[in-house]
Image (tube, rainbow, N blue to C red; front, side, top):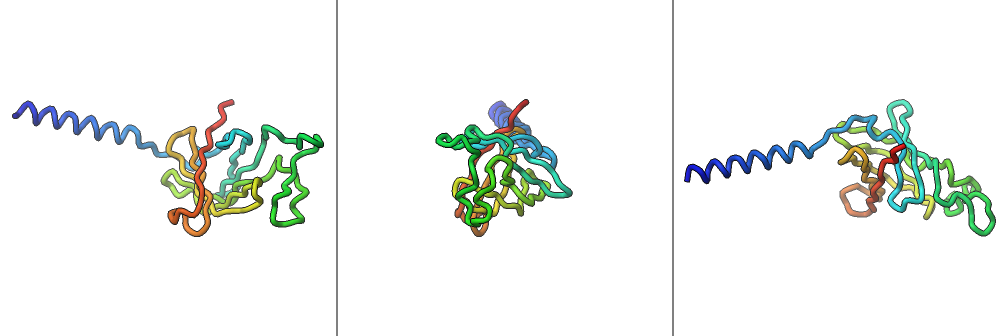
Length: 154
């Protein structure tokens, strides 16, 4: 019985050590760098300006329209005056603030594939993996979509 208790204590200790070893804490600047979107058709560079974080497209798998060879335009934008701007260089992420717990929030994300802007929250659970959640209403309400972005290692 005493031996069983010792084995149980050892297993419990190992389990707790594993939990704490897998829990990482990140700093605000850890989000900086170049990220490949889930569709692997765009790279976004995240930069810091003042106390906020922003991200713009710096690479596209297909930057030009296949039939014309002209740069792809933001032609899905709801604002007609913005439909003539190129997708390359578009700022997708705006106004994010680090909350101190692996989350950047209070920002927005623009989706050039449908021309819409959404509230957004970024979560980092691993150094080279971001979870980007665009949503309507509140992040926890389920009215949104989460995608994974992976860090581009130069």
